[in-house]
Length: 88
View 1 (cartoon, rainbow, N blue to C red):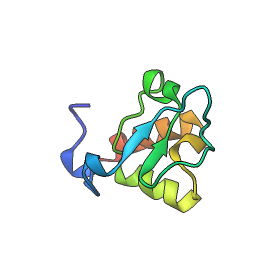
View 2: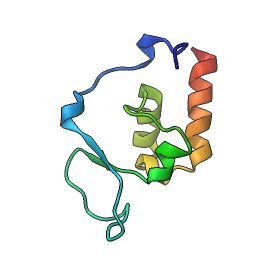
View 3: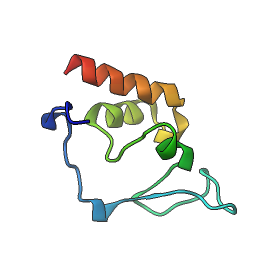
View 4: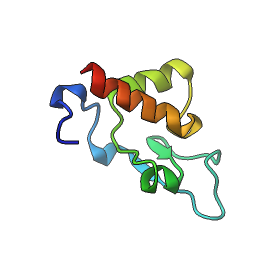
């Protein structure tokens, strides 16, 4: 990640304003969560190398499609990251 330009990211809030929760056995992604909480599956971070915070392009895609990050196919986020790295 050392070759990613710093201007690719915009700080929209401090990390104290949001949190990532990995649902336990009794909860699911579709469970109601509090404001500022982004539910994600653990495999997204362990196997697919998701990183927080999301880039401006990723955030724009989520907003345009009206989806949360866990609703995109894992390869879609990988494609977005590859596109950003080659287009930068």
